[in-house]
Image 1 (tube, rainbow, N blue to C red):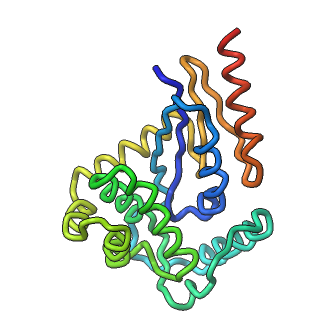
Image 2: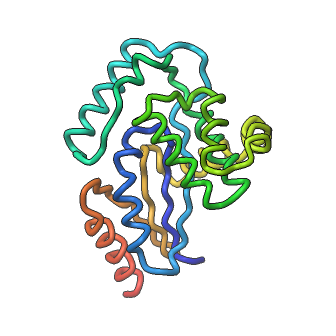
Length: 210
């Protein structure tokens, strides 16, 4: 089995947004031959209920904490005025799967489109209308996407990825797990220094070789 780096995320997870730059740098620097598997962890199930004030305050506080701890990460707080937030991220997760069905590279493109729309442009990715618009903006076939995002197959894939991430004991978002044969290592995330994560991967490689 090839060396594998599992990345569990949700496009509407604010800490995943904060981790974006470190994750991209890690992908560029890891040794060739390591298979990167992206899994959707599914932060919040479908809901049409308006977000409770206590949840809204919790999320806003999270954004503020992230801006302090990861200074390059920005948020547009107009979202809380312009949109009607719901605690529902599964639609955005399905959107990544539906886009991925058309082109493999649409996985990351759709994820970034959702993050940018949500965190910078005050658009609501819990709404299917927004997600269809974003699919068109990344160059996907909007008609096919609109069918795929609500298909039973897409729902099955989402549940399968959530189950797989849980079976790997990756229950927090984001999470990284490096697997080398029968050796497994949860990578301690570093939002500011990719070298620390690379060192952890290299450390496991050395242990596996001894």
